[in-house]
Amino acid sequence: MSFNTLTGIPLASLFSLPNISYLNLASNLLSGSLPGHLSCGIKLDYIHISNNRFTADLPSCLGPESEERVVNFGGSCLSVSTQNQEPDHIAM
Image (cartoon, rainbow, N blue to C red; front, side, top):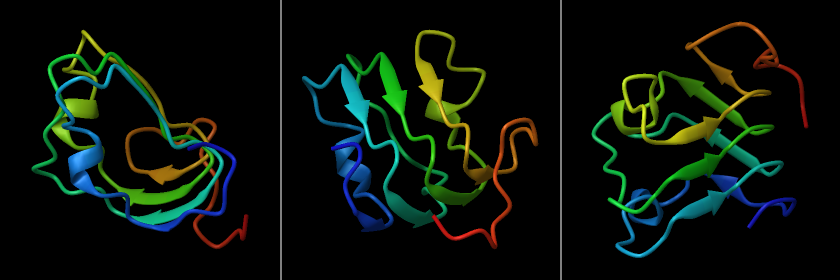
């Protein structure tokens, strides 16, 4: 679902689908904060949410303590790291 004009916050249920292993939502117009209680499916190994306008913190299932998953989130306004993050006021 990358490189579309998806807006808003993605449904939390996308991350917890039982048989999904790869979720690519990169380069859309998604914004807001992902729910802190977000649950990731057991088979979800790779999440690409970069180049959106997400803010706040990464949910724990997407954070650094989740060593079994690769999470690409650069180009957003998440408070994890300022490296390769875009300012919140820049329109995409």
